[in-house]
Length: 263
Ligand code: 6AU
Image (cartoon, rainbow, N blue to C red; front, side):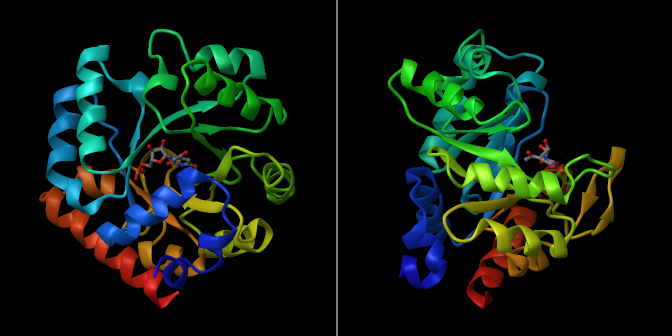
């Protein structure tokens, strides 16, 4: 069943976290990763509770939360665990390997609760080892998503950069996949061509209301993104700014799942 639905991605992917995500997606019939970009822990908890059945992953930005403390945060993580979804901290690491390892610790102690983190490869391949060492320091493992493209207008991740990131990233153990530009199906298709089937493509910049968003964000349609090669759709405001968040999340889930079956 899993291989039938995910195709080569299921058999070729070496990352335990990618497989876990793919299994959850099948179980819950959704490719939606919720970007819970809210500013208080109570708001994040309420949002997760409303949309829980429709999400396959939870993405957080620990450093935007005004009332952060570790106890409240662990409650949020427990909610995600009860829903069977992985926890992704979208702190975009970009430093040298040694410092990235230290940034996994610190006050937020990301290494202890995040299953996935995001990184730019701009500083070179050792950043991935640094992040993996961060997890090892507390006896845990995790997966790294490398930014190969971005959804924001005027970003500097050009085609040559994208190709270089994928060339290196595909050789690095611990890379579970790439961030692609969900607002542009052609960009996703081009990324899929070079990524192949050993790594996943996760795309932000997804909204049923396609076009320009606030502050340079751009949006593409969820169905188009999956058909073009996106394996996970990161949806933030499309869900958390809607009138009925539970229903809207279910709608994104339905569209993403049907598109995967059609793909
Ligand atoms: O759906 P939105 O626009 O409300 O939220 C999009 C989410 C935000 C961004 O931090 C993130 O996706 N994001 C990323 C990621 C996931 O790494 C990369 C990117 O290029 N664009 C982008 O929006 O939480």
